[in-house]
Length: 84
Image (cartoon, rainbow, N blue to C red; front, side, top):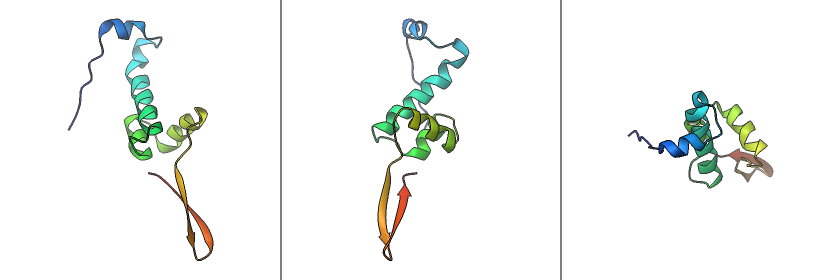
C-alpha cells in the first residue's frame, strides 16, 4: 500500500525549506515524530526518512530522542536490546 499526502500550496509556500529539499525534510520530520510518539519502530522510521539507521540515530539523538532499549538478564549478565 502506498499513500499520497496532499499539502496545500499556502502551507508549502510558508515552509522555510528550499523547494528542492521539501519532500526529504517532511519525510524526515514525519519519521522523527512518529518514532518519538512510539507509533513507528526505529528501522521503519529510518526507512521512511530515507536514511540509514546510523544517520537517523544521529538526528534522533540530536533532538534528545533516544533509542528504546530494554535490559534483560542472561545468566546473570545484562543484555541490552534496542528496538528495530
